[in-house]
Image (tube, rainbow, N blue to C red):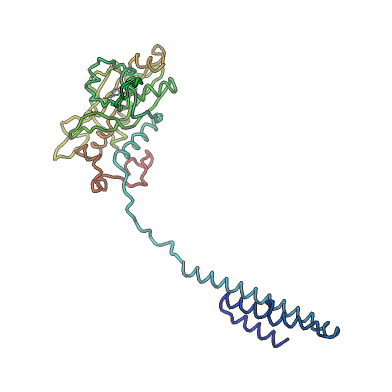
Length: 357
Ligand code: DAH
């Protein structure tokens, strides 16, 4: 029995794999293993012999089983150590930069505008890009015969014969979101509505699809002075300068009374656009006091409530801030252009962190 013991304890210690260990287990304590065969011989012994050999064999079996288990655990530990050594990684190495694409200037500017107006208490509203001619025109005090309808170069949705739903258009401006927002929440209200708009127009500063942001502030005593202050604050924050020269020009829109268009001083010298200097003016927005009929059409009582609205071209102010001379390039999907004018994906514009990084 001592020989058996020495033999197996030695073999187990020398085993170098779990497979080898399993072979040893079968050889020693398997059904037909050496120890098991010895146990079968107990039957042939005298009771005295059996009393000595039985417990000794059992003890040997236990000893071999625990040696097998201990060796198995040791082999597993060694395998894990080996793997950890192989998969070691230096987390202090600098990361590998990978090109991930860029944020389009329109998205960037939309985020910047949103951050600035959010800081002044405006929340973001949305409306559909395909809307009825009622929301796009009538509710905004632009009746069927009004020249503004023709001027806007509207895209009308195709209507099958016999379709008697109201005519739908690709919205020509974000102003219909004024109506939808007031219908939804009533007054007081303070929202901006950025989004895509469409007009059949195409040259260096016009594309058939472009972007506007609408603003609307209605309360008991909101005046033109509030409008002027909000726009000046916006322009300073947006262009990240202490002073920008604005020009308020009396104008006319069917949905505001009085109305003003706002231009910003700029120069086009050398083909690049600069803000705050030069002798040129670029129109960036239309604005005014919301017409009582518009309030009424949206279910807001004009005897109780008043306020201002404005609509600004996002593409225009993106061109101005980032010196982009041709609007059409925005929508060419030219990767070289995007790498040049685009923004890093993880630089989210905030007022506290700096709008444009
Ligand atoms: N909707 C006008 C446009 O697309 C812009 C505009 C002018 C919006 C005056 C307004 C406003 O809210 O008050 O040209």
